[in-house]
Length: 81
Image 1: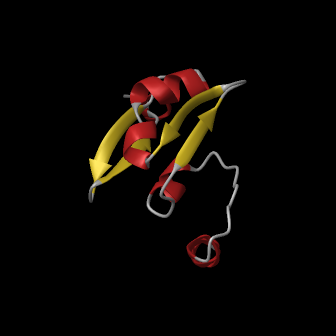
Image 2: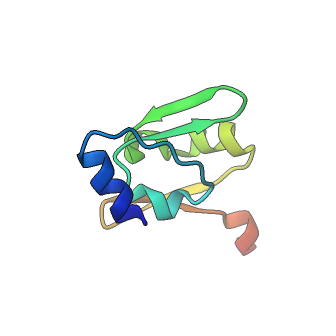
Image 3: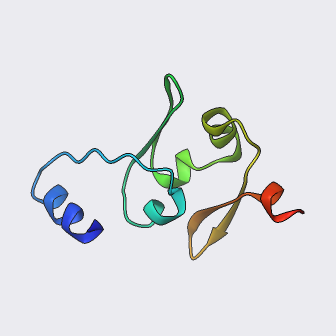
């Protein structure tokens, strides 16, 4: 599905997709927007997926790790650490 959306984007089509799956999207989308009653942040995954932006967006402290050059969100509270 994401490859199809990428092909459509490459052809000049604007794509709007809503999801809470930031880890799944970060590797496939060139730009992200986080919204919580207002636009919290817009930019590349590296610019948007930060602890401060995620806390303002989701109201929770989330850890952001790097894996293969991409940000990965980890909810350490749910892991009990």
